[in-house]
Image (cartoon, rainbow, N blue to C red; front, side):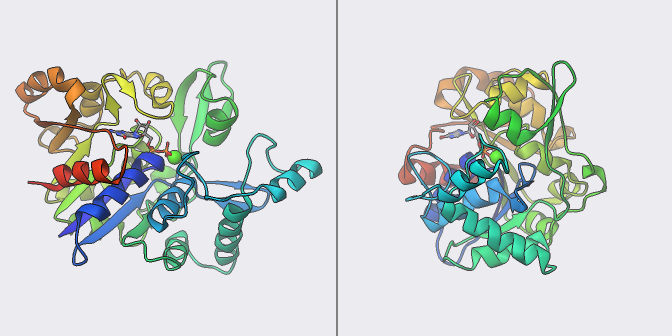
Length: 313
Ligand code: GDP
Ligand code: CA
């Protein structure tokens, strides 16, 4: 079976790890990863969502913190802070910096981000292909109340999403093209899954890359998993992003944001949590194939069970 997942960082990584556990050696997993969180800092290119998925699949991620490498140290970051370089509130682990330096070196040698992702993935038997959504640099910016414009990472990490966001933008995205293999991975899959990732700043930028919505229209089957359980974002601050675009933090509002393919949207099937079972009848009446399912990914077993449910016709 060929499964293609559209994903952000941590929610995406949990889901893809579960999917790998649910599938066999003959099955193919491709992950189209958000690159809107990417940025240049102290001369190196960071790709947080790609690295979150890479580290999780490689089993070298820090499961306690939820991001970065396990057994990490921060000596280089301390030096950068002493130099007044970079962002003092944005710590880069030493092992993580190794990844960023390798990536930046390869980009400087002329490799595309897609080629770099392939090289990074070759280090460990991760059991999946990681495809950046695009090779163009279309970092996410946030416009906050008062009109200031920040890089997404500054709003998210420095301000913990506390400044009220009024808009998100990915400058240049209208001229971007899907990364190498992305369209084929979507149209050639037996099923495409929108991971339970942040709908606004993880899945949102992927859907905005010209050509990706069209490819989803040509896909065999597209299934989405609610990142909202019981009216709450499970981990993180995705509610601050939803509020900025006028969408309620609820499983049905996110479903309607994505929309049904039969009605110009991107999904055929929507998985909601048991806590949100009461929302299912109204969605079904609108024509949704809505399924009620445990959606907590608390360990490899629950993540694999969710993945199995998502890919079941
Ligand atoms: P990020 O890029 O690291 O912010 O990660 P993602 O965009 O992939 O995912 C973040 C979102 O995943 C969170 O805001 C949650 O809504 C969702 N999420 C995280 N863990 C779970 C889980 O166990 N189950 C479900 N259904 N959603 C989750
Ligand atoms: Ca992210």
